[in-house]
Image (cartoon, rainbow, N blue to C red; front, side, top):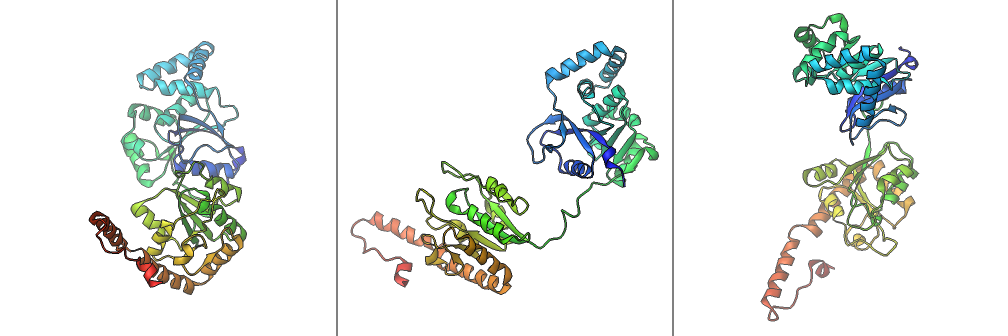
Length: 399
């Protein structure tokens, strides 16, 4: 087992769209095991995986890079100017300039790590030449076939203290194409936390809707928190709607400590939306009146879930109890909602019954033939006052 606590790794990475997931995962595991991480980015942008708060992060500015180069040129001319000329010959002046800046910020770092064999590697190379620190580089794939600076790549390879590559195929390519000696190469495949990613049976609860108070996201989160079961997972589809004030549903998730049990899919439509309906175990929409009195008509997402043959859990809100007869709870009844969720979870037989009932309800109440009524109304009003007496709706007649 390595002594991770002895490692302070200076990481050269691009964060143009955040870290690549596999890079972020590797650095996270290194830190989890005790290593210190300092990150020196070539680019910085928004993405799914930004630097963790515990990592030392050193973004650059044009002014900082310019000043660092001027100071280094004056204080270390015998080191600076030969490397500058070398970078000119290798078409890597920008990489050299960034390396000069980063080299002044490596306090405590005892190993340089270039996460790719492109500009990150070239910056690492110049930092090594400036500081004498050991350099390790991981080669993934495109650097071998479409390197942005193949001349610099070939030049820098012999200076790396160790080249890592992620596949046996790459290992052979580096030997054959670039003449890298086998003893300078090591195969280290991409890593994953197999405790985090493992087979798990989850009871998947879907809620779809704009982030409005009346949709009941908070009530659902409260019920999940009350149940205290880590095998319950909530899938949230939707986002900010047309309301003046949308509910901060992600903030509520964090407030109730449910980050590991709630997945946010964002707004979905078409095949993607149908996919989550088909994949969930139960659909839940605990809607209620808002503080200003605003309520629902009949939530279309309930119709969609029922049409997909899913058990639905909702509330005795406006029109809902006139259509759905089972597994309704009172508005804002957290205890009742928790019991209903548990009831559905514990009984496969009940889930089967509700699935059949949901599908039949969707056919009986909400089929596309409802449009026939609307079309008939259009025809009647076009015909004018001489048209026959207005018919009652089918539901009113049946009642």
